[in-house]
Length: 148
Image (cartoon, rainbow, N blue to C red; front, side, top):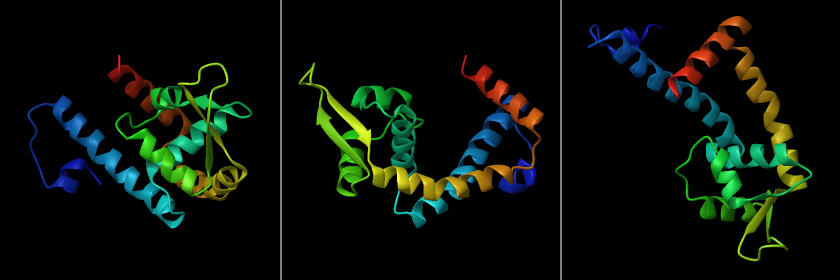
């Protein structure tokens, strides 16, 4: 569906405005689809992101600041977010031996198990994207260019 049809707007101030609106609309569309997967597993998108980041660092742990630096959503209250993941036993948090003021995070076996359960659903959703590998690469290049 074209963005004009989706938001019932025929005219835009410029093609750049149309692209930005389309990007924001598409972001929310994609997030809604992923959120359905997360909700079924009692997670939020931000919690999933933290688990994904920590899995990528295994067997090492990461400082809270390091995690925040690479999160997709830079705004969440990471302390509360981690408290919730701790309560669910999906991560562990402990002080750094070398810097007592720094807290380290590590994904647990339960967290890994949950990601293993979710991964096929995320991959299935990504495979449904109606674009080729080349188009996906071009899209990523364009999005990278927007952030320069």
